[in-house]
Image 1 (cartoon, rainbow, N blue to C red):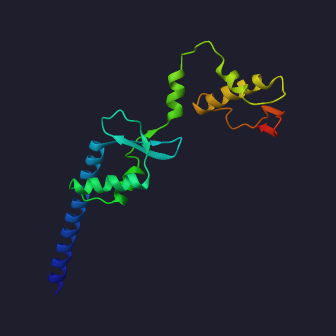
Image 2: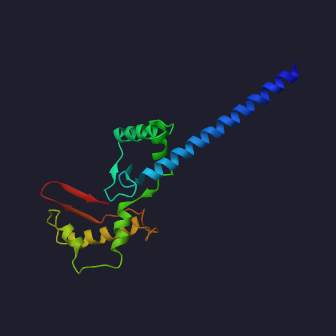
Image 3: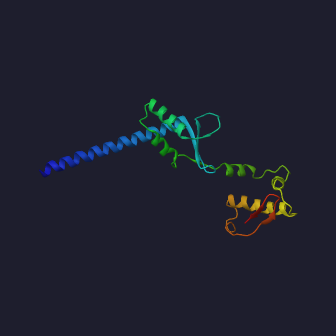
Amino acid sequence: MKSKNLKNIKAENQRNRQSERLKNDITRRLLNYLERKYEMRFNTALGCTEARKAGSNEPFVAVDERMRNTIAIKARLDGIDAWDKDIRRYMESDFVKAFNPVDIFLEGLRGRWDGKNHIEMLADCVPNDNARWAEWFHTWFLAMVAQWLGLNISHGNRCGTVAHFTTRLSEVYFL
């Protein structure tokens, strides 16, 4: 009786190993398929996965449930045994590279200046009566960008009043 149990256990272990290998094979096929057919990135600023067809110059678009379902159906039609939950699991994993458009934009500006004070022009868009508003906004804006880029980590979490002014619409506080 004991030898029969031992045989059953060995057979079950072998089936489990084969099943695990099959799962890994299906996962690999799905990953290869998705990477061959699509370019995907996780937009950290928007908090969503974006995709486009591989090798295209089309803009990336945010992946919604409809697109995810379409990708799953196309994969199944192409012989990949995957469901929408498998596609979602991939898209919400570290297998999709992170992309931060703000960081890329700011890095692209490094070392380039056209001589115009764009920060002051931005400050002028805020209606207010404070003569020092543009100066304060400029200081705050530079500090905010430096903090974003990790250039000034020793002061980033301090609170201080940068500007307090009354606009025609309401009171605005920057801390």
